[in-house]
Image (cartoon, rainbow, N blue to C red):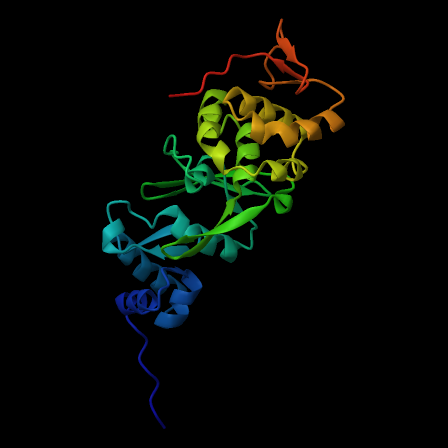
Length: 267
């Protein structure tokens, strides 16, 4: 009878994964491969983590950190988020300022990688990598597209969905001035005909605010179909800046919107 092959050492386990193009694993997979007890596996993984060969991005989920990312202390978020979300069984997409970058609107590098989920989850820190999670109602209705990364593909909101989310989550995007600046660059990527369909996945005031801001940054042509959508549905006027006083704000009749703040695109 042929003797069983000896279990690979921890380093060999990582090398075998990397050679197959895989840079993530679970503690359960490591335990099975190393043929060790749970505690012994944890000790082996802790040693690798101290040597900065691996990093933990979630309980029981690890990434291999190749030499070029040792200073980062982790893989870049776009290289492990798809695998992590699959492991957790969570629908997701990269959105807001992160998605805007993928669409060429890199006005300002976001301080964290922004991921939208259909339920709350704590922010993630892995080395110098930060991932923020934002709850998006009706997440599965938001149109997304896949973009290639060094480790596979990433789900990213389409340009139209990104524009709508930026307005809906303006505080997470740096405020209306920052949103307006990003829309200035994102506008040329928008398909005006798709905006009304995308708007159905969000509260109507998001569409009212987005349309106003597009006109504000000289993208009225892109906003035209959205204006028809709003006019057919908006029975009440909304505030441009939510939860702020209306005061003596002027009303934009086209968008049924009280302009209760001044918007200056951030430089």
